[in-house]
Length: 193
Length: 193
DNA sequence: ACAATAAGTACGTACGTACATATTCTTTCA
DNA sequence: TGAAAGAATATGTACGTACGTACTTATTGT
Image (cartoon, each protein chain N blue to C red):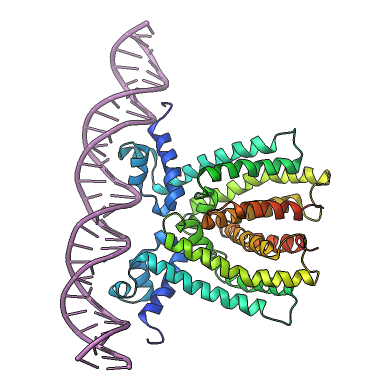
């Protein structure tokens, strides 16, 4: 497969178009035009638009995981600072998009859970995998006294990611960084021991 | 206007169809079929699908506001108990839908902020109005020592509603009440003084 | 009488997908 | 090593359906 195959171009374009118009609003014709590839390539590589969406999600989550690793595996930082670092990385990207785009995981979670079991099940697996390093990080933080031990580390991680998605939602509506900063400030202050 | 005019039937059906398929996935034909009214009624009452979506949102928010008032104006309860009561009322409705439907405000916030300034601006106004009674309730709770005074009441209210939307998002993916309960438990425990 | 609502149909376009064919890449064996 | 065979990818077009909206005429209510 070539370095920049049509399939890869379609996945990249799909991410961009789905970010802007959502899954239902992302027409296959828009995607192939954005990718600059002929129409037939879509049919060749993807049996359906639903499967295409699932693969776009997979690729997006791969990218998210590189950010998670970059932040949470930085042993030069304490657990809490690692999580703040993760938010830094995400905010950097959200700012680059003018706070117009959010998170594809949240976008598909809102739009597709009632119409595609394929994507809903993938999202469930994504969350499970996404949470794991955060739960571990928080558990370590608890043993260092950085996080309250009133709750299970897993529960705090779930609360953290879900609330973060809520903050991004509000960010999209306001097109402002304020909801993100508010979340950071209150979350870290309130989950301290 | 009759008690059950076609316009009202369309708004009701629109809410149902948009809950299931989102705005882009809600075809006008599906809406009129669900409403059991002829096709022309849609054109008569709404200049565009976008305007229709905005009116569906308005009506939905009217309903949300009745729940806010029912809970937050119950002076027999303390501020914190009033907010828990609000969550009770919402959870009751979410459970009735098998945790498949979420909140239309969040749904449109994810799907429409990049494609409809009409709806985005309406959502901004909705949030402003939605927050107000919560900020007042929290301020009262702060004076009673029920909420931490480390943050402005307004900021806690924003954090509360945004994080709640995040919990609903996760609920939709998992089709489970767990994310809602987790939010309640951790939020109220952590924003205590 | 007039305005508002109801109703049916039709238009031009956009949709996801199917399909036939051409080209490129990979594997296999003399 | 090199050519033939087979698989994967590339490409253009066409199909049947669904889309949002416009338009004309009827009915109701004041």
